[in-house]
Length: 424
Image (cartoon, rainbow, N blue to C red; front, side, top):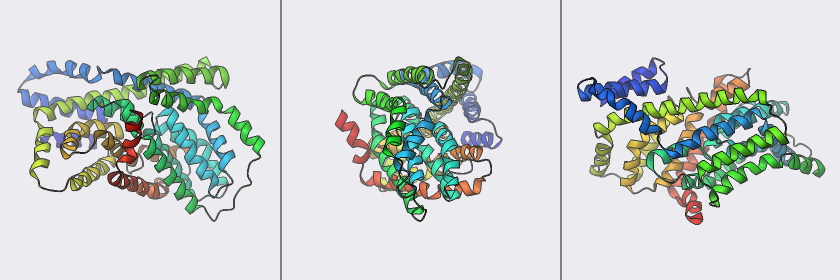
């Protein structure tokens, strides 16, 4: 087992893409364990079964919806709404940035799309108003991570695909923690910006004008998330409905898209979806080897045999996820660790819906943890004159807020479980 893990780490260190690193390590394990090339006949079967899941249909649809909204510049209007309504508060533009990130997260389900869309508008505006540069960069990078906690969420879809848990319940479990984490982010910005001069409140006429102009975009999360919670359609159907609705408002209402934009949108959708599905296939090949070696069973037996407090084991799991987040991206971490951790969590008596939120918040940390935090590179790409050191210092307090939320969830599991149980 250690040999195959060492091979995987070596391939990753050599710069081979995660999907191929997982695939090659899995292939080596299959050849070694089967003692010949006969095991290669399992490759197409495993690849097919890994993607033969109706739940995964939602992934390309949510990616497509995110690309439509990103290209259609819906996020800019959302930021304008938040800025007009909240700019007069302490740290008003920072508050507007986090709220815009939260709303766009509920629309797109993508952390990278959220950081790109809101950051492109918010960063120059906040810097021009005298906000601390590290705070500006950190708030956008951290605000973008809300895209995978507030539903819809691609990591939650993958969690449901791997474990068989209800994606609707997984989505619902992220709402209240997402709101609490958004409030914590806002509190950090208000505390660190309280000495800045406040802006004049926007006239009420301007506030309602921008609200009316952006009403169609603001209705999208209500349509997608509300439709799921109300039982009108499944998460996969919600993705299809949201995609059609986003096409209608960007083409016919806002007129921010034309037919010439479609090839680029479809190209980016195919690239992102292919990347995700390639990682899924690679992770399933590697997971096949772990299953043959009975690693999940051994881990469960080890946890059972060790007479330690279950909270100690949970802390160890969080530290492992934090460490992996420094070197791997979120999709890979979920697909590699979840088949092993899920039976352990069940054996320890933790609720799998609750653990979904803990796992996703750890993945949020992975997005802002150097050296490979995706949102850090996104912000560096937007703010060309920034460097990685100041972005990393900027996200530090927001990372602590995420760790605090994990601790709160451990003490009060109802924070994640109340809404799914209430709506059920």
